[in-house]
Length: 252
Picture 1 (cartoon, rainbow, N blue to C red):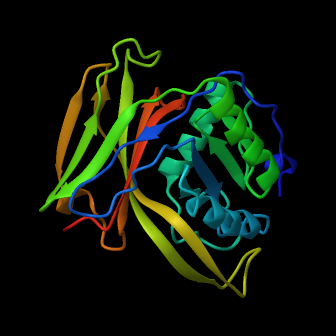
Picture 2 (tube, rainbow, N blue to C red):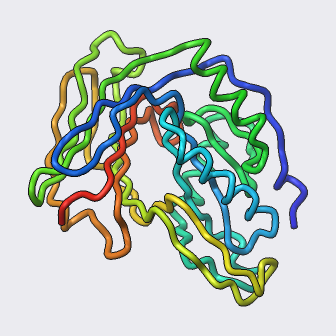
């Protein structure tokens, strides 16, 4: 496998923090989010299972929104990842392009769209989260809730926010847990569990500093195997994430 799978980068000085305010008929988290942790992983990568297991620890934290985004570029090694999407591979490349370092590998964690660390190195990921919270906390009010068969996303007004010019509002349909029997490739013969796997990732609108509300038919965005939603408010294709929210068990 390529040597750049395990790469390192020092913490970025440009930091942002996240605030979630969520409510509604379905269960929603109502806490201050300090970080969004995205894990780029692959069922065909023998270095990834420790990172996949570590992600569960971050999912259990109230101050972190953690997502798994499986990539497809290791499929040629003998096992086609059953969760992978070329969209996530491109998202990972977008981050590398924005940072300017070209570092694309698995398992890779991106924290708040800014800092990358090896996905199995919890100590370094923790340092990134702490540094972000300490150096430049930014509170962008974001909420997601379920009203009957509608998903409602609300983003507060913040015209002086550094990211207020133009941000994409992403909606992720999430499978909270899934077991996979891997029959070939580097992990052949293993049964592995994956957590908070993103099964669909769609741009639902833009935020430019003023208050916005988005209403979506839940049937049009919920996948057959998903049981949660996440919202990310992000600058550019691979820029900082400035807001996030989480919703479990929305109505269909």
